[in-house]
Image (tube, rainbow, N blue to C red; front, top):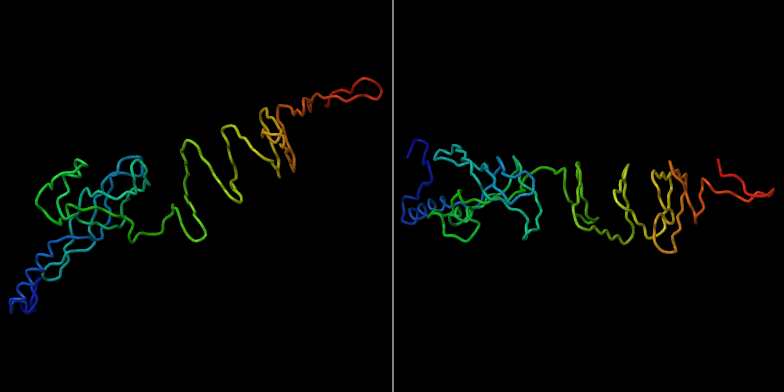
Length: 261
């Protein structure tokens, strides 16, 4: 005992009874069992690219204390497998980033052989509940995201300050009421087919040859309505075989008129 009283894990009175001594031994044994703790990501083997699930190096955030209650930071933990939402070949790829805060949980036995082979294996050693056998679960105590998928009572919102790319075989959008594209410019690189009426409320510019019969829509009910100017550059407009640029009219004085200037 020091002049300031008991120091260390042994509390005053624990050494005065058999129960106190046993309780001290149990406490000492439990202190060697690691369950879970908050950690900060130091580095990650992946950076959002298409790859198998990787590993993170982390720094435990809850310090150790010595017998005089002085802080002793933990050392870094290396190559902890991290969690990805994945089933078979289907996944949501959101790799941890430096300074992310998350939870490290620790396995009851040595998992090093399973980490190396990704298959069933015996424990790599006799260690139990050791920080070397950690697994990282992210997303705790972090800041406000800038790129996200948000679910609330009003619906689903996808927000990104960068490009959003969808790669697939076929894309189908089924909207029961309406669909709207709000963008300063929209580009369609392939054939555009419209099954229904097309209404233009601004200038329509056609740079190459185009067939206007509900704008290449199929079926007999193919009316097109343009509210505003229609400009055709370097080409012609033909309706039922009659050219806008070269058509003529019967001349009351005989013959036909000339083509429009």
